View 1 (cartoon, rainbow, N blue to C red):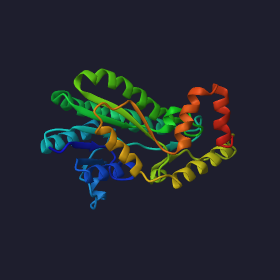
View 2: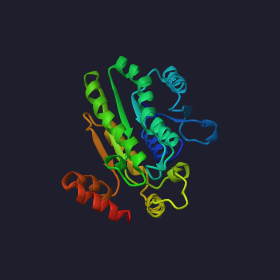
View 3: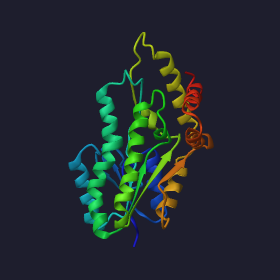
View 4: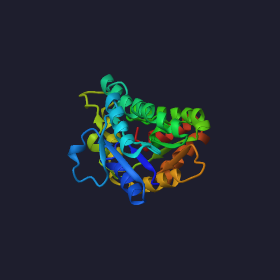
Length: 267
């Protein structure tokens, strides 16, 4: 029987690339979108889901279970970008990012884990970010939300191991997607002490995305992980320098690593 995959945020970007790749590989794939009607030509079936709305999550999961009787693989991919100085980012936008990037996956897991526990099998892959391994300037909220999800995954993994439910994190670097179009940017404040650093960093972030690799690389890694007998905990997908930055954080003195980041961002 084909394995059934649920991937949140499957209408665009990395999520869409993963969904199409797994479908072409023979999996039964369902993506989600808050507004599936906007994507009538989606090559992958989309069910309505807002990861901030428990009722919508429950309805979406029930719809898939009714059709397929199971969900074998959950990929928590839905997320939002956010940039801005820590001090000047509106708290409501901070809450929105955390509600989507951290609490959202937890809500989906509360809806999906019961069926996985019942069948005593399942795979969960949480899409985090290389940015979640460090507090990046003017991306601190995004880093915090993805870092929190990565740590939570470690706990889920240990708690669910005896149920034959395997958890892993996949942390992408910069890939060529439309993430910038939906990202919240804290407004520039005239006379702000952060204006110069924020402006320079924002341009650098967007340039990295524009020059990013094809998200199919993430999709290939996802397929590799879900087909492993015993998958690991953390996987990184990105350029050598992006992945090496995580290694450097482990081995360099803290202040030296901080100076390296500041130099990279021109601060």
